[in-house]
Image (cartoon, rainbow, N blue to C red; front, side):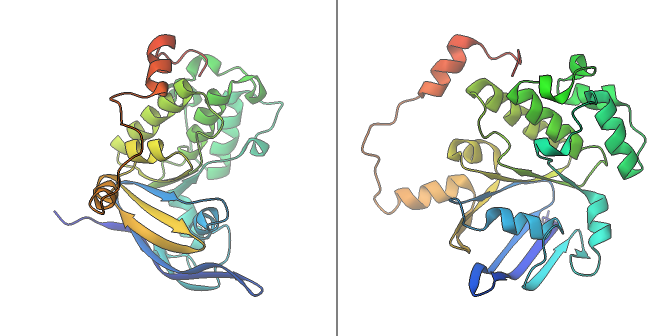
Length: 254
């Protein structure tokens, strides 16, 4: 069955004065996949996402999201996407259930806060303030807010940065579960193991250009075919696996 394109980016350019931050990139995202944008700081990943999300204007190029043009149909795009909020987006005086009700009102959606919190394993924190949560809990709540309007696509910008290994892996499970429900996920990350586990395909961006785009497995195979060998023998597990095994894999306060 032919894959359906849900995001189409053609010859995207973004300039700031004489500086060209994005240099004519092209890529497509298929419906229902987890697509990763990888690259060093300043590569253009976040700028690209913000343009697709209609939060930043492009200089030139054509972008469609679920068939809607970012230039002329931004309001339609906003109805079908979910964007992960940063901590500054949450009112400190409200508890989690109240925050969800607030954002549901902004979307004009009727929602049961507890049901949404259950999806991200935070139902027992419904009366807690955002500032009282652990790092992993804050990230899971932030992802919950992207689901309020039942979006076709969600955008997650480095969702596991600063989390401990347990919280990271718990978040991986949550993201994979969201995709199982049919939602397309676009993610940026600096963790290559994260991209390898989660992403169906990744685009590697450097200096405003896409320098590789394929499945993680194929990109690895392509590198190996050049004769590349790791200088240290690869073991069947890594230190993060040891940490998880010894400390337990429960949600706990992650």
